[in-house]
Image: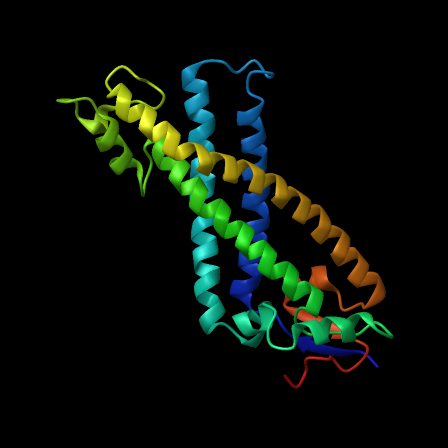
Length: 237
């Protein structure tokens, strides 16, 4: 017997699709920056333009993520941390989920909760490292003014510094800044590779759950409603 349940509230659905879109755009722009020479992009102005576009999209990504983190404290039951992340008895839940007939859930199934934890951690790492590089590469907020003031040569207005231009900077301090920001860049790039893997894994997992459990995961993230054939395992949580 089919029964429809209201699950995902509007802010949660908006976050999902904004996050999906911004992450794809950020990956696209990131790949353009990595392979700019192969595409014939060599001028400093073009390099700065690519970085600026990447950073502006990144601001939307970060704002969306911050709102979602806040909403996890005040949203509906399925938007909150308790329904998103692994909790007490998680191992037993996973074993029960994997055993026997496929089970249906209103919110995330146990494997889905683990995936959300990994995904949210990766997004936070991307946000923090991205903001640091935005400030240290092209002097954008929230850390740009600090970086510019640190590297500006004596008597030079930090606001006049141009990204990647060493003309009016203290070379020693610029070398120190480069050493500082390097690890953030490495973590940012490798986390982006991991995020690409997670996206592919997420698509595969959604398709698998649609086939084995049903419930219309994709349509539910648009309408907010799931249609199930059995009593959900988490109905009385």
